[in-house]
Length: 194
Image 1: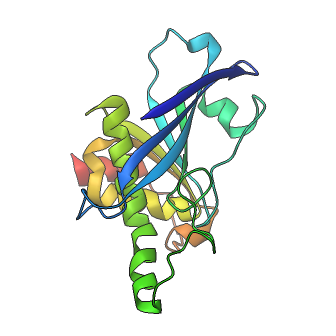
Image 2 (image 1 turned 30 degrees about the vertical axis):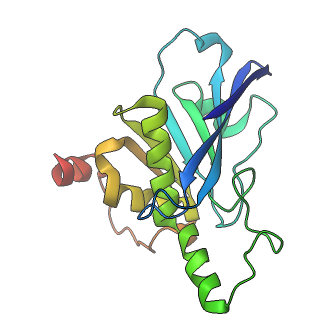
C-alpha cells in the first residue's frame, strides 16, 4: 500500500493506493490499483474514530474530491474517518478508457469488463478494510449505484459492517420500494442478523 498524507482546510487527507487482484478467483494473476482517500478532522487527530467508506453513484464516476470542510463530508467527518473509494475502473484507480481496454474480441472484452461489477468493487472494499483495520468493523454509505454496492456488501460481508447508510432518494442503485408505513430499519436489521 502506497500512501501520501497532507493537510488542508482543517482536514487531514491520506491518499492510499492498493494493489488488488483483477480476478479474485485467480489472485496471483493480473493486478490492478485501487485508490481511496481518507479524510479525518485535524482536531480529532489523536481520537479513535471509526471508519465510513463511501460508495459513489454512477457507475463510472470517481469519488468526490472535496477541497473545503463543508457538506456531507463535514458532517460525516465529525463521527468518522471518511474513505472515498475510486471504484475499480474510475478516477485514480485503474481507469477504463478507450486507450486502456485490451485489444481483444468482443467476447473477451465482455469477460474483462465483468471484473468491474459491484461484486468486485465490494471485494476491493473488503480487501481495503482488512488492510487498514483488520477484523474491526466499519460503516458504509452508498449513493445511487453505491447503494447497490452497499446491498451487495450486506449480502456477502455483513460481519465486517457496523452500520449501513443508503441514499434512498437515488433510486437507480436500490430496488424501488414503496413505503406504506414507517419501517424501523434498526429493529429489522437486528431481527435479521442477531
